[in-house]
Image 1: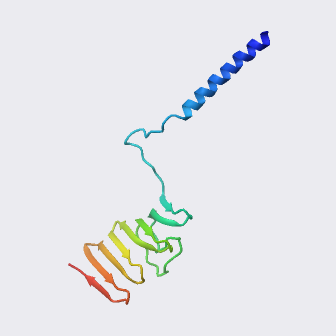
Image 2: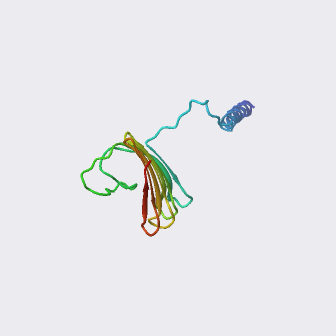
Length: 143
């Protein structure tokens, strides 16, 4: 009889602990308040196939590099640190790029057909709008 009573008590204690654990895990998750911050060196958004579709990153000072890290050209020119936001087409080509450096900021919008694009740039006290059509005809507008 003693064994049965001890097993019953132990079973009830275990059941009680199980309920506490289950209810604790089922509680709603809420943010702690408006001061919560997500920090990181970059943010990447991928589609359902795992392809990169958007990114926000800090590019260190140095020679010009592509989004994949390869050097664009090796002319010895050093670019300042930049913060770059890119929206990327399904074919992997960036179609929207917004960037800022200590020298200025710019917005690049590319069309579906190369080399169609618009570049709005404010750098070093100068503002320009560059329009390029599919046939390569370019118009630069300055105030």
